Image (cartoon, rainbow, N blue to C red; front, side, top):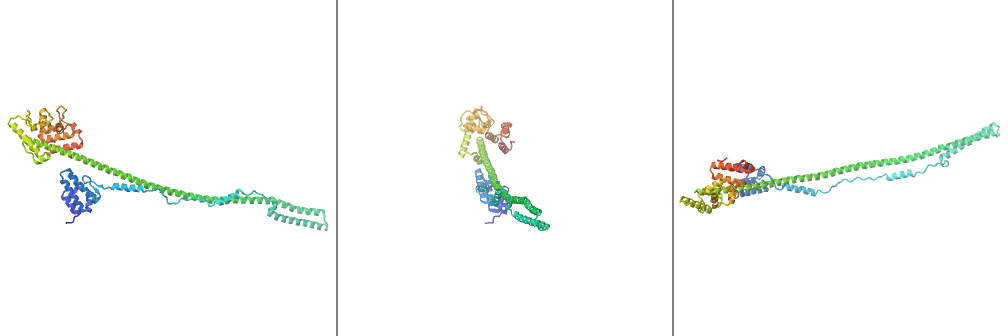
Length: 468
C-alpha cells in the first residue's frame, strides 16, 4: 500500500478541483493525519456525486464524524465552518468547578494584639502619687536641726564663757553685773541664731517634699510615654495588618470576579454559538423546504410537459417521465386516452378532449391549459381540465384558479405564482410566454416578494433563455 502524504493529498484534491472547499481546519488536520485528508476528499466527491439531499446530508455527516474523531471539531452543513466539539461547554464546566471550589476567604497572618507591660508600674506610681501623705515637719525630727542646735549651743556656751572671762580679767577677777550681762547677751545671740534657722529648715524640708512629688510625676510620665510609644507601634502594626488583609480580600474578590466574568463571557459565547447553530438549523430546514418546493415544481412542470407531449401525439422520454413521478401504467393509459381522442376527432366523432371521449366540447387539453395559463376559466376549459383529472385544488395551485372568484385566475401565493410561471414557460411559445409573464409579474407583485423568492423566479426565468 503506497504511503499517504500531505503533499499527495494536496495534489489529489487539486486534481479533483476540490482543494478550495477544504477549510483551514481541515488542511491543518490533514497535515497531521494525511489519511484524514484523503478520507474527507472522498466524502466531498460523494457529496458532489449525490443526487438527493439525503445522500448529500449523509456524506456530510460522515465527514463531520471524521473531523470530530481526528480534530475534535465539525465543519457545519457545508464543511467550511469550525465548530469545536464541546470546547466552550467544557470550559464553562471548568470555570463552574473553580467557582464552586473557590472557598471562603482566609488570611494567614496573625492579627497583632496589645498588652500593656507597664500597667503595674503605672498603677503603683499613680497610687503613690494619689495616696502621698500631706507635708508635715517637726524640728525635733529634723536631723539638721539637731546638728544646728548642738553647734549653736556649743558656740553660745563658748561665747558666754569668753565674755565672763574677759569681764573677770578686766575687773581683777571679781564678777560684776556688766560681765553677767555681756555673757548673757553673747549666749542669747547664738540662741537667736538657732531659732532663725528654723524657717530655713522648714523650707528645705518642704522643697524636698515637692521635689520628691515632682520626681514621682516624672517617673509616671516616663512610664506613660513609653507605654504610649508601645501602643502607637501596636496601632501601626494593626493598621498594616488591616491593609494587608484588605489587599488580600480585594485580591480574593478580584479573582472571584474574574471567574464570574470568564463564566459570563463563555456563556455568552456559548449562546452565540448556540444561536448560530440554531440559525444554521433554521437555514437548513428552510433550504430543505425550498428544495422540496422546487422539486415539487419540477415534478409538476414535468407532469405538464408529459401531458403536453402525450396530447400532441408524442412520446415523452424516460427521464421526463421519471421526473414527473408518473408510473409507466399511468403514462400508457394517458397515451391510450389521447390516441382515442385523436381517433375520434379524426373520424368526426365530436368527442371531448378527455379520456372519457364523451360530451360536446371540441377543446383539446392543450388548448384548455393555454386558456388556464391566460387566466380564462370558462365552463369548457374547466370541463376539459376536470375530465382529465384536475381537481379544484390542483387548478388553484397550478393556474391560480379561484372557485369563488368569478372564474378569474391570478392567486397571490408564491408557490402558485412560481408554478404558473413554470407551466407557462414550458408550454407557451416565447412570445406568448413573455406576455403572460409580464401580466403576472407586475411591479406590485414583484415588490411584494422576498429577496429569496425574487432570486428563485429570476433563476427560473434564466433557465428559459427566451424570457428575460
